[in-house]
Length: 76
Image (cartoon, rainbow, N blue to C red):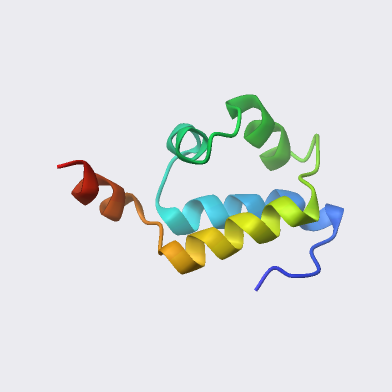
């Protein structure tokens, strides 16, 4: 899906990955233990996530089927 992402696409890809989970930015950052400011900078296109980070996030989200609803079910 996102393999071969270049720096110009980082902003779009990180936002698409986050939105695919149904999480807001704060929840996404907490879940993946990424500093809030880092994700904010990626989404504002002020900084670019390394390609391997995007690939790892994509892989994890797809294979673990991370969805906000699933997280809430597990916590109950």
